[in-house]
Image (cartoon, rainbow, N blue to C red; front, side, top):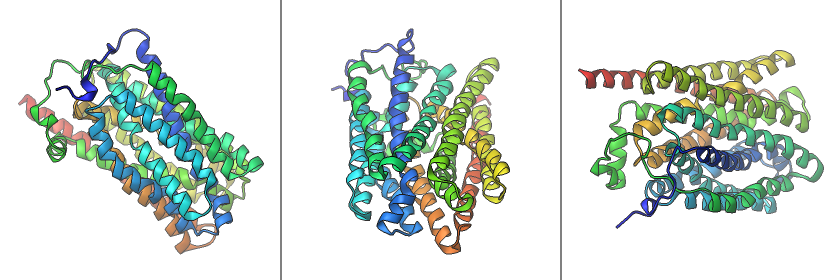
Length: 434
């Protein structure tokens, strides 16, 4: 009996222009993901005023309400991605998270917004593992980091759209309409994705290696198999730590600029859109392109080299992010913020290319879901709440800067963990040769 995802795959991967079309559609879907995820950071200030919420409550709304339910759905989605039709899963998830985002505009208080954010988190748990698994079967190892880097441009583009367009909507029509506007594009894109994207053959670009029998075993057996692969757990742990700082900072940055630098919400949104949307997207593309070029020049994809390259990025991101919080003069602060934004998404292409390549075609969905589970529950959930809690504890306008600065230390630790991943992968490769 065939698994649903194996039944009649009707796309031959890496053929002509079609993979690039699929990349474009998936990038648009992930852009909707970015918009729906980022809009909460834009509206924290007006929501807090309307419902009289503390920074700790806003941290729960932006972090745990989303992250816990994302985490609960992550592993079930990962199992489904490795077994079912991924095109159908992506279309369904896109419809659900977009609809839930639009319905957040009807919230009547803290708990109704929590329910809405929980629904968004549950559905968005399917986005990354599904998209990355599809891309890995449309692009071979020599172009995979570039494709994933382009796909992750969408996070920055989505954030830019959320803060530019959403900022204007908040100022002119209120925060409720910002949620409605954020949800509509995904509802329009879902049927296009369903009708035009084809399901590729799994592992068609990964060489002659045959999947192990245990890759079709139970969940615990598959997780154990992933854990045994050199460096993979280090990569997963690193992304969890990196997310705590980067996502926490991007979520609270509007509040920081309003409180500490007395910016109007429209200008703050424009600055964040430029830093994380424009420069962040450029950095994400360049990092994937550069490491693919380096690997091609040096004989092919090398996961140890790629992890080492990826490790440098969060170290620099943390340094520039902490500097942004420490500098009080506006112009130097903006320079550091732009540098931090440029670097913020650059690790995605290299490190996810390492993860999906090491995991193999039958375990990619589960591996990415493990990353997303940890990154959203611990990284996004705890990191975002930590910033709000520290802000409440320290008090005053500077409290938010202290919270973000502390969270960025986790990003620095993630860079160190990627160095450990590179070393573990290299050591295992040497032992295999010996």
